[in-house]
Length: 314
Image (tube, rainbow, N blue to C red):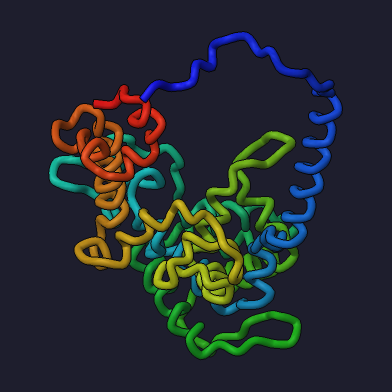
C-alpha cells in the first residue's frame, strides 16, 4: 500500500493567520487558568511555627526539651554528623557511611547553643549570671543530677495564667533560675532570633531553631493535626487534606514495609533502593531483552500504525 506524498508544494487556498493575536489569547487563557486553579486548589499559606508560639502554648514541654538540651540527652545532642561527633543516629549500609564521610558541617553544642549562650545575651540580670556561673563551674555529675531532678520535677509542674511554670521543691541547683529566664526569653520572641546563625540581613539558616523545636512536641503535634505524619503517608501531602507531591509516593511507599519500616537505617536504605531503580530505568535502552519489550507488545504497533500500514515496518 502506497503512502501519500506530503512533500509536494501546497496548491490549495491560503487563509490569513495572526500569530501575535493567537499568542496573546493563549497567554491570557493560561494566566486566567493559573489564577483560577490557584484559588481553587492551592494549599493554604499557614503561618510558620516559632519557639515563641511553642513556649506560650506548651511551656512545660518547652522546659522539658530545654533541660534535655542542657544535659545533652536530646535527639539533636545524640544525633551525630552533621551536628556533632556522637554516633547515636549514624546510618549505614554495609560499608556505606555517608554521614561519617561528610563529617560535621553544622556543629551544634545543645547546652551552649540552646541554653547557656542565649541566657548570656540577657542584659542586666546579675542573679541569672550568677546561676550560669554556678552551673558552669559545677562538675559534670552534679550538672547531670540537677538536670535530671529538674526534669522529674517538670512531670508534676503547674502552669500559671501568665505562662510561668512552677515545679515542686527539690535539689535542682541553679537550673530553675536558668530555665525560668530561658522561658521568659522564649515567650517574648527573643530566643527565635538568638538561635539564628546567619549574620546577613535576610535570615535563611533556620537549622538550630528547627532542630530545637523538633526535639520537643510542637512540630509532632502540628504534623498530626495536619495529617502529615509518616504513618499517614504524609510526605505526599500538603497541609490538611490538600494533595501534594504525588511523585513522592514511590519514596514514601518503602517506609511502610519491611525491612525499611522498623530499620534505624531506613533513610539510607530507601535512597539506595531508589538509586538502583533509577539507574535500572536509565539503563533500559542498554539491557537486552528488557529493551525489546515494547517491540513485542501490540500497543507498539498500534501507536505506530501509520508506519506499519505504509509497509515500512519490520
